[in-house]
Image (tube, rainbow, N blue to C red; front, side, top):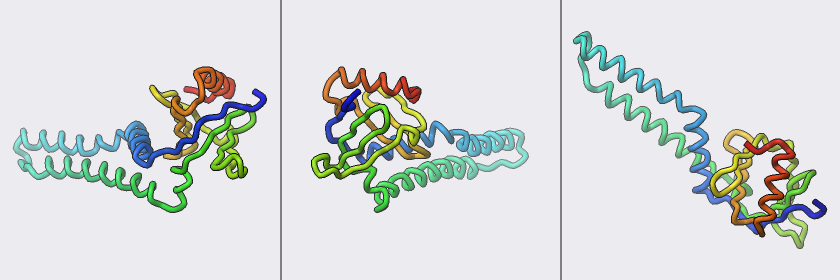
Length: 167
């Protein structure tokens, strides 16, 4: 690939980031919701055997789980507002080649940077995009729509396969 694969200008929307982060959080840490479920099951047993009949533990278990989920959602929302994370939501033109990924804010003025392939932990192919996972809750979202042609998408997928990143 002499020039590489160039995309149209695209920026990750904060709402999309929040959805991606919440989805990853639920996939990786779903087992924490077993604690309130366990408390409720123990309470059901205690109620049925008349050892300690009460109703408030049901409410505390459900509200505690909901509050924890809401807290994490607020954390991801706050991440989109932090000044140091603003570059994650700016619009860029991506150029992919065998050596690295060029991220151009303004290609004519040579404003941009490079992202080496070894910074990418994995790539997930979704129904409408590629999701580059750089670290915990750090993503580069590349929708199919920003590629200039179907041929570019096929070349890009071949490149990802050669780099052994595509899941």
